[in-house]
Length: 454
Image 1 (cartoon, rainbow, N blue to C red):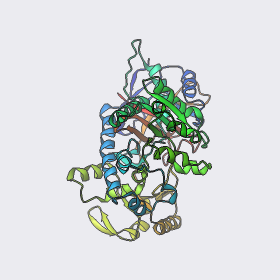
Image 2 (cartoon, one colour; image 1 turned 90 degrees about the vertical axis):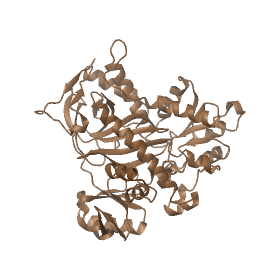
Image 3 (cartoon, rainbow, N blue to C red; image 1 turned 90 degrees about the horizontal axis):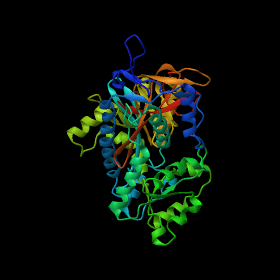
Image 4 (tube, rainbow, N blue to C red; image 1 turned 30 degrees about the vertical axis):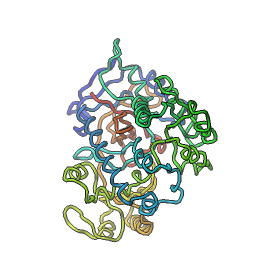
């Protein structure tokens, strides 16, 4: 069984928010390597040359802070998105949503607007003053759920004592999501039968990615089935006791359109009463324009709301030629953005996986001005303060290595919230210690793990 190791001042130490202890490897590195790869086999998860040697452990107070702030901010984000216009049509216009997003809404507007935020994963880094939320991913197709479940399966087996106890704690993503569906079914007086809707035809995803979750539910008191789009009529066009009235919308419209998948079967399921969460209204919460509105402040926000946003959300503004507040003063936004690229990041409203993101300090002035000019014309981008990511020490296993090695990395944290409940803390980083936009599908040194509380 692993033990705690104190990170002394003469060694790599990182930011104090991460704590001063970490967990040591609990088995030979080859055993850890094989177990980690076995758990994520046949899911489409990319091969990683650098793997974690132990879970990333942080103090319980830090762990609790992340989820406390996440839940509070998600509620503010939801209200901000809904109040942009009184109807779906008005919101589509206000956000200048692409026509492809004008689909898959429930006929019942109350249900539609009640359940957009069932599945959320913010992305945050630890800045000089603590957690800073860079964006909010609001979608049933979040990355990190299967991965966190799989990492925890390994760590719990390796780090448990003879009575099954571990030195750390973490909720199980699947267990929390199963409880979310139980509560949802109870609230709506529906049978606890869950459809997991996705497709292994999407690049980088395989059938087992969805089946792992369905199997978990079936083994824990729910009835669940994974549906490809062409099978989805079987979720509703059956005898009442065989229908699947609720489900997980584990796909994005752009991903399906990219591979030529038709969303019509999903619309038919929705029109026939199948509730798939998060509902399409989640796309308004997901848009970074909502973060811009929240950061700028809404008339209904209390003093406590504003203090929460100021503490945890970097200064973020919808980019346009106008005046706005900056550190207590009014500034002309566009000239300020052009002159201060080293301070800012430019982000498209619906960009994903680090796409459509320009970090000002990483490009020259001409490239920055060109990107800003195009974004102003489009009208659906934000600028955000650059947050210098702080570091922590982790133990990693490189391909071919016989021992783990310690590295200082700058992780991006992804707290999972299902139905508002903490469901595990996914994180990703570059194993060579570099920082920047971290995507596990970009670069040979990218890696992932889960954070646990100690």
